[in-house]
Image (cartoon, rainbow, N blue to C red; front, side, top):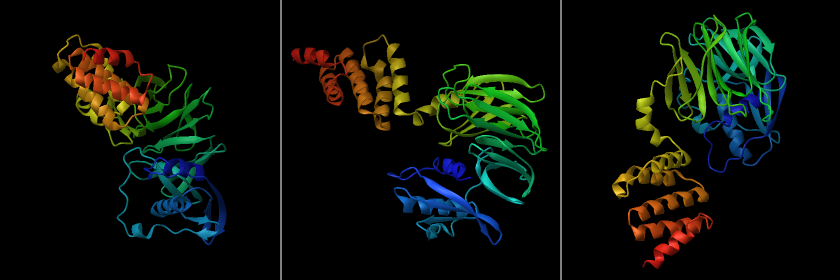
Length: 374
């Protein structure tokens, strides 16, 4: 359970300077069954210990966090805070089942009747509950993501830790714990989802050396056991969850930065027009540079007005924060644009900045020619 919980915790926003957590856990008897004791020994241990203790408390997990035997209580400033907002459809949360005790990452059905919970380790386990009572359970090596429908059918995926030969498996089980669908991918799986009526399942893969499986969404019809589509997302950013709206035959992709995109079951991007207008605010500096370079290669005119859009993208890329090497490349582009437009002074300024950032950026001769002109 600890590995699952820490995987979930490290996806949360972290303060500057926080180190990734390392910990040891054990299960010990308590008055109402068994509880988890977490022992920490790591940099910033007070910060991490209180953060973990606070989140466990907020999630209702029966656990005690200790450092060198000393109990670390939850943050008192948050003890009486408002309840956390409910997760978006398809989002994973920490779930504790009581009958019998089972705790891990999990997902609740939209009607709240079912919960699928798993522990992400090599000897992994999963449990399906109706209410708080477990109705079936099983073992899967490294289960990593899942969803359950209102009918109790659930999807769950597993992935290997071998980056050179990744393999992901997408399972669908019925409410009795029987496998009704299994698909294997030559890529690890990021997230998956099942439609509320149990008729469709989908997953998103991580990057892979096999382009057929790399970074794609796969949608399957469970009635025919056939793949309906496979496609790449228009926006490449960390995805928190996906969900299937069966009545509209739409796949909803929920990103960690709260962007939500809709796709048809045939892979058509339904929010493309809106995204074209909004994406600059969400893209990284590197993505903005790639957009600017693509636009720049298509410009034949020499007047500065023709370059206004590219210049805006390049300046936005700088403002987003990129490496010195990339900054040098951006200033080289800006210098070349001003040079094409006859703005010698501005071109010299950008070329000099580019050289300071990266002496091998490739503008030294151009700068010398500009300076020689006076």
